[in-house]
Length: 174
Image (tube, rainbow, N blue to C red; front, top):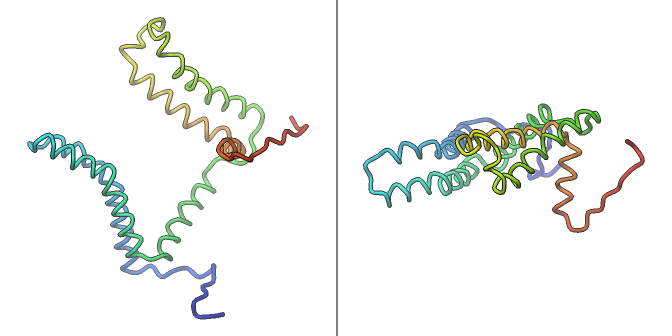
């Protein structure tokens, strides 16, 4: 084994560089939470806009690059592996029962259809105009939840939509 080859089973050392990089990464990704603080200051509107924009778009990305540079590839891979392992463990199963799949499809389609038809028939729904935000929030939550109810095989189907050469192979299983 050459000195540059690292075994996959070897855990990287969690030292001060890893902790500093992790802290910078967390601070960077939490920076958008400071936008309400900036908007309540007495700064000029132009400065509020610039600072809020940086907090939302620029700072998280720059802090991520700095954090990865500090902690190194091994530290970044450790964080990435822990996150992916968490989602593998607690994420949706690959195969789900037919009943769960049908419930998930209904949960998936209702917000899509409602979002598509609501601009044309909002006046027909009582109370929609006064509670538009709540209805939209519920629809978004239902849409995201449906992706977990539908399971991992559905994610593969969605992924295939974006692959030009993907083909559907429909089996005789029901």
